Every structure is written in structure tokens, then in C-alpha cells.
Amino acid sequence: MKKMITLLAVLGVSAGIALSAQPRKGAPSENGSAERVRPSREQIVDAQCARLVEELALDDATAAKFSPVFKAYKNDLFAVKKKYHPVKQSVEPGAAPERKTDAEIEKMILDKFAEGRELIDVRESYYSKFKAFLNPRQIQKIYEQEKKTGAGMKHEQMARKGGAPGGMHGPGNGGRGPASGRK
Image (cartoon, rainbow, N blue to C red; front, top):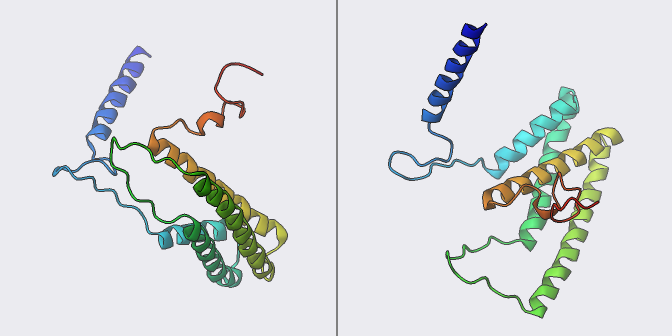
């Protein structure tokens, strides 16, 4: 028994060394540059579509109807989000954070309302298109998958920024603010 445990420990350590020697995705290469390959937005939408076709157990005929409608739906959602969230300019390290005026803050709030209305309009218009060949349970799964994907992206962004997953009100904290043991 002791030999077995020792053998497993040695195998585990050697496997760990072998894995750590492998270049990581996004790690600097030999020339020092990071080779991070991100899938395109179209590739991501294609993968989501394929996952949903499988999850919804769609037959070939229904999948053929679903795919172009789903891709158009995602493109329309993206267009609305892009309209309200243009590409941010990178800030120089060490630069002081910019302070927003009251007018800028008010515009941000009003834009958030407008964005929400437009997103709802897109979802509502595509609901009738999805309803032509999917049942309500299947449509609900699309919305659930969309919500999971958004939560996953938010989690990944927080991790990249070095913040705790979920932030101050995240998982494991019951949404109560800083973990202080209060109930």
C-alpha cells in the first residue's frame, strides 16, 4: 500500500512538472510576446448556436431554421450593446482616473435606460421569430444560456482585472457586502 501511495505521488509530481513545462495559452513565447489567440465574435456565436442546437435536441430541419435566426438575434443584440459601449481607449499606467461631471453621469444613466429598452425590443421581436419553430421551454433555455454566458463573461473580466470573482456582492457572500460574518 505504501509503495502504491509513493508511486502515485511520484507520478503526480512528474505530471505536474511536465504540465508546467508546456507553454500556456496567452503566456509569453520565447521571443517574449504574448500569443493570446481569441476567437472571433462569429466563432463564439457559432459555438453558442451549436451548443444550443444540441441542448435543445433540435432535428436537422429545425436546426436549419434556428441557426440563422439565432445568429441574427445575437448580431442585433451586439449592435445595441456596441452602440452604447464604444471601444474604450486604454489608459496609461499610473494616470489619474478621470472624474465625471454630473452631466456625464446623468447621460450614462439615461443611456443605460435607452439601452435596456432597445435590448428588450430586440428580444421581443425575436421571440415571435423563435416561436415559429420552437416551443416556450426551448425559448426559455435560449434566454437561460444567454444569462449564463453573460455571467461567465463578467466573472472572467473580474478575474482578469484581479478582482475577486463576483466582486463585493459575489458568490459565497450572500450579496451582503464585505464578508464580515453578519447575517
